Length: 112
Length: 120
Image (cartoon, rainbow over all chains, first blue to last red; front, side):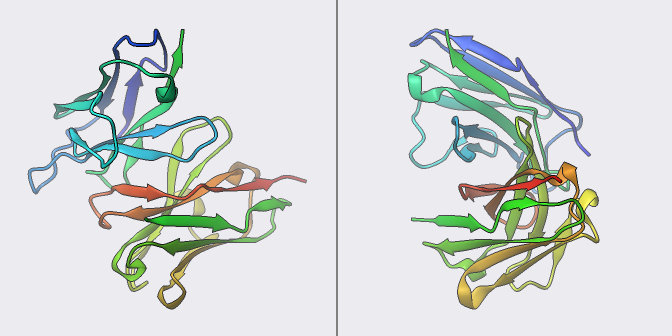
């Protein structure tokens, strides 16, 4: 299976400051249709995962524009421009290009 | 509004069985692939099984093949996971998730989850 490696695994951030999470895949995530199926999910404490970003950089409906996704091939990044208290939680990247789809280990974002 | 509500979790002994259910609403259930994804306590996410819109195709992660069976009832807007021969390593929160398409993989909506604990 394709291995997804996130870093850092823990990210203490000051409110109002930016945050960045890296996700690297063991194989290219470009699919035969030309799209790259790399998603980001947010899991707040005690809640289920919520999709934030799909196909690298597309924000889901209702997701604040302080969240942005970028990258290509095997290297991807989720950025939060100004961290707010409600952003605390664990963030997972997930690749959907290669069967069966695999998740990163998760990055825990907390407030300093 | 898309809603997925799981039920059926609980405490079961090793070797036992459990049937999970997921009630879907807010979308045309019969038009979507559906999946079960699990999360062991304090761990990450692992896809478990999925099923095509009409139930004609089903796929499983290797660790549950032969023990778990996914099914659906489109008339009842419901998804199921029959879990037999349960092991301690099956202990997890099980989420029902809607798929954008069967492949490539993408889960756009998730339920709140139901906890399965396998222990004597």
